[in-house]
Image (cartoon, rainbow, N blue to C red; front, side):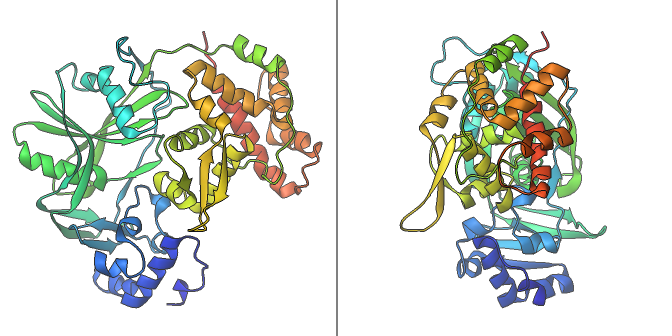
Length: 440
């Protein structure tokens, strides 16, 4: 069991799960019979089970799970099973897919479709614009179910990650949550929503509701759908799935991806050129590292998460598809731009993140003004300004060696290796700016 103690734990979940693995000899029992069942009372000895068993993405798993190809599934309200299960499905976005335009109803004022800060608001927006109706080729849909419910009793097979072995699992009234259920004359659509572009998802989030409602609605086709929405692109992506064998967890198959976009003002090259000419270079922030966070869309999604409440590092990690290191990188990047900040909570001693007034005000703007404001926040920093200037003059983004030369001309007090890693962030952010510009 030395592998349980040699690696220094990074999170509270890591620490608690290592103690549980030691106390119950979990690895030995998994290697012996293929899985290990554990109840919530046992988990609660070290930490609340609700915090210890919900991992929506592979990146969220504790280190000991990743190291041994393990995952965890609920099998009742108070019991879980751990094994080398192939529990997650990758999500690949088709970059060639044209977004279908959707019109937002003019009479609705209670939804700001340019600033959707929750899964429920994104689903509501998609429903009222007719996107979800369009998924059934125009059959009238009714928004009928959402929230937590009991799965009922059923059995299924699940593959392992390491070989072709399958395990039989029985679920006895576990809890599942449905973000949105929509019923028409012929179909029942089950939506799992993410307020960001996902790299993967836990199949259970679609499979358990699918098994529940397939048993209830035997005369209608139940269609499991993953919906993602990013406040950066304003694109609603729907991944329509089918379970080829209802009794097989891993029989999930992507049938179709559809993208929709609500018409908004376009951002032109002239808009950004005018903005660039008005830029005033800001001083580099004190005690905040130069960004190492290549995907700017994630920064926009991250600050959107903070609109409604402050979040700890652990909560951000759990709510996004991050590990703790990525959480640090992306929160630091947002702090570098002045969009968010952090403090140590006096009672819990946890680090908490919050939107700055500037970040809050920026997110309240309409789409075009908001995106131009994000671009301005990037370009007011010298390295990004000079890199974008090169891009405008030459018609292409410079390679990382040119960017490193620009960075070396600044007094950043960081070594060559660090400069090399962080030059890719500069390329990524400049690339994001160009992706926001209309071809028209």
